[in-house]
Image (cartoon, rainbow, N blue to C red; front, side, top):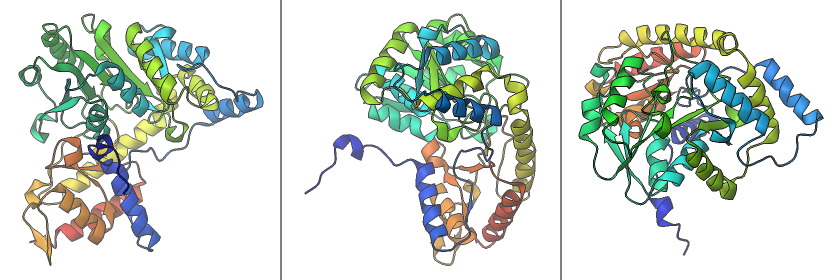
Length: 398
């Protein structure tokens, strides 16, 4: 009898990938599904970045690179951190990985011992909790609601700290809520954390360039946090390079060395050609490179939020970044259509998938079971059609 490991059995399938899989299965049957479940920009990689990759092929960048990444790429990331984020990371404090997801896994595997606790402000990206479990740590959820704009306070954070707390992991702009923590809010959290010098901060800033506020702020710039913050970023979202698989960290040197050691035994370096493309992306002036994408996403956000507000029972905040809305749909719990009863957000999403033929993701996997995530990385027509379908089919519930 085949038996997988207990480690695998403890992991949940990625909710976003599961919904994408179910969507493809229905599409294969000829059903017109509007897929709003995956977090992938519907833009192509900029031409100047593709040209850098083509040149790398012609220049025979087809060999192994150092595990932590090409020196010239790490130098360009170091310059990017200083230019865009006022973060001081030397090239040897940077580790390039096969996407920011691997960067997060490297950090957790490097820092967590069995039963170490990691504080997760809710909502959080679906893979955080599972990566922590994979590293034998314990995810500890800190709840928030749409009424607080999905933000947690220093007092909430402190109330969850125990003798086992090793790390805090969060994203800003946030996937799935689009929440952006301000400088003053992060400074208040940092002030509280001064009392707990053995807690590390993992700041996921992958949506940095899709930020509708005046400024992106990195918690690692706060002097008391500098030596215990790992800043995670990459090229997938801001530069529409999801398939290139390049993410990276800036970290205290000992953490960078630890991540390099882990990665050396798991994957070694990421693709050499993709690294040269990422180097070109890092050297670009980000505001001009990402301007069109950011402006497009902002228009879509406004349109989608306004359309959702027209549907009775859907409660929506105004996301300040990323490309998702995370509405509270709990008013529909207990309602039904024919033999379909909506008991929770998962039932709600399955109802939309099977009847409205719109794919979204239930909030349970993000730590907020009263919500769903809708990606607006899709055309205006797809978004308006999707909301029309949702409105029609929610109107059938009673």
